[in-house]
Length: 66
View: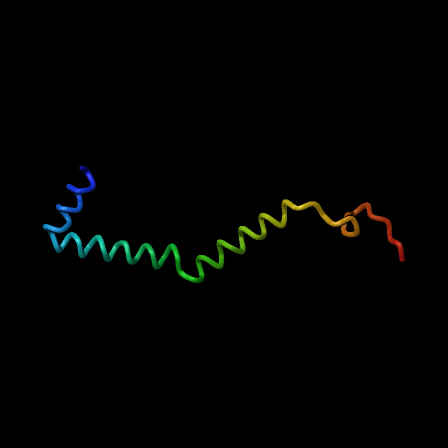
């Protein structure tokens, strides 16, 4: 019922609907731009890779077998 009331209110006030739409479009552009999404994925991959154990050869105490 609350959602229906809110939608009815927005439909009865075109100016408020326009403002809400513009604000939503701006937020979507900021939150989901290509640059923002790339930064988030890079940060996620860095975090995930940092949590993996080092390969045996990359460990500081690994013996050199040359």
